[in-house]
Length: 195
Image 1 (cartoon, rainbow, N blue to C red):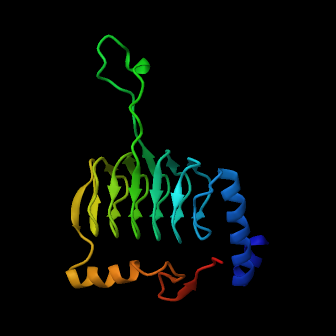
Image 2: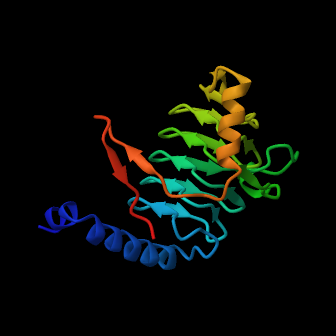
Image 3: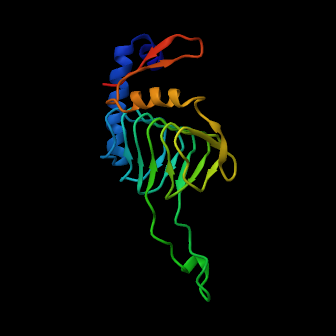
């Protein structure tokens, strides 16, 4: 019944979604995320997570400390950002007792799409407008506007065909974040339900 009522009124759905995100921001202790940031389902996210406008984290993600994402970033389900594994280079000490190096900052710039079950090692930077294919393992930084995939992730191709296309996209990303519309598979537009 709840889904039926919510699907019939975009205003009611928008209000429900905003109340849900207020609750989730408090539940996760996320004080550094934009009011338009959305989490779907349950995830494990460090309290110091920083997220820009209209960014999205799908169900089942695990995000370690010192991670910042900018506007319009999308995480597919079960994305993991991890790092600072146990040291293995201390002679005479088992790895379990060797400690961990200090965790490095991880940055994901605007308009990045991270595919399902991708693993990102802490300390990398994923450039503006990039795409990471599902089930990839990102061990090194990714330049802007490139599509990467695989284990370890390597460049597959450029996102845009020309510098002119990149310039047009850069003009849009340099504007203040704005509400847009989702395009459905059938071509119809669906409004954002953000305040």
